[in-house]
Image 1: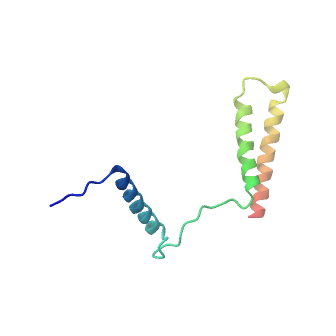
Image 2: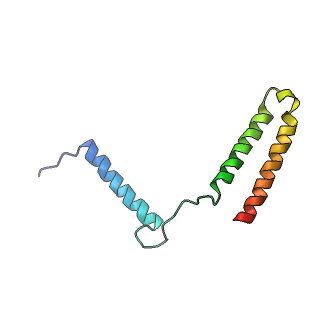
Length: 94
């Protein structure tokens, strides 16, 4: 009996095809079972991004070793207000 030699490339390619097929089947991409899963994109991507940036900025202000010329505490309060207002606005938009 002759046993074919498998190259690493063909094994990886075959494994990738099998994995992709199993993933499609599991997520319902074949039309059997569940509908295809789609990533939930935010309705307002700029507001979503702004919220993340504001949270990062607040954390950076809170962890800073200096007081930013005396404006650190006011900047933290204003950043908290901005985050709260954007979250409220986003609730009405969705």
